[in-house]
Length: 317
Ligand SMILES: C[S@@+](CC[C@H](N)C(=O)[O-])C[C@H]1O[C@@H](n2cnc3c(N)ncnc32)[C@H](O)[C@@H]1O
Image (tube, rainbow, N blue to C red; front, top):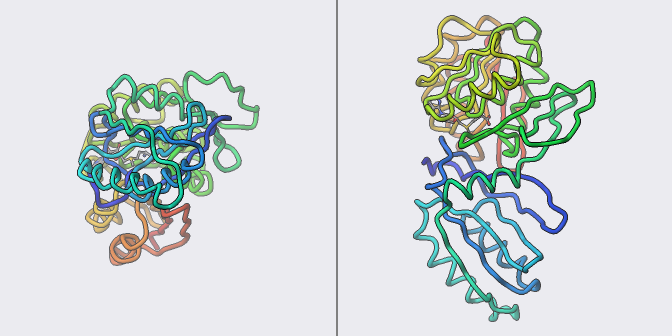
């Protein structure tokens, strides 16, 4: 797991009896349940906000305040378990701020079974931009006739639209995918962006991931969405898996990958081709990702930001 970026929320959603806090969070190259700890703090309502703030500030993700029973739930990457003692110490200081003391602090590894439950609870039907609707395979939501529907079962792969980086890429794809174009999706995860490109009219989409689990999930989702004749999913290492050139390449992978692969990008783009990136934030965007892509000869055309996350569009002139 990379810790160069903040880590991602298991997902985003709303529930009538709970408030979700969104996150200091980030991207992991692959989502495995064994890489997460779940934290449950039972605490009177008067101290819930403060507990949520401590957890967010300590690098937790998916922080959720529950009313019945009053508690706060969060997730911490297992690699950062050394932070638990600091979290505990800070929570014990609540009475010093005239807040009620916590009643219980439970920390458990996230098992594969409850990770699936988490995803199912958070992943809801949601619209992106003006036309794309993404929803889980178990949703009963009826899309309207004008919407382009993407139905996903994410399994253990990344990419439901719940994370800001995916959402930004979907919005940019809606704006930049032209009919009959050739598109590549580097780091496809669930296949969400590749399927979106196909539904938006791309003639051919090559979707690459270096994680065999993600490749299997993406392939199943491609078939589920009836775009198998357009999207080819392949296991491989980034741009090295591509053949030929593309009108548009989308890449939602961590900053270090975006920086390291920047010199390769122009070789795979047609003249006037578009490169959409996300997965970067703050200093990484300013000091490494943007300069590396511009040094490769691409011109920044548009930048969007959601919370800490940046997505950008570059063009090959
Ligand atoms: C943040 S997820 C993005 C998933 C999806 N495209 C989205 O936007 O939600 C990054 C994906 O990139 C993949 N990945 C990381 N390094 C890679 C590499 N060198 N080559 C191909 N895929 C890679 C990960 O396995 C993961 O599925």
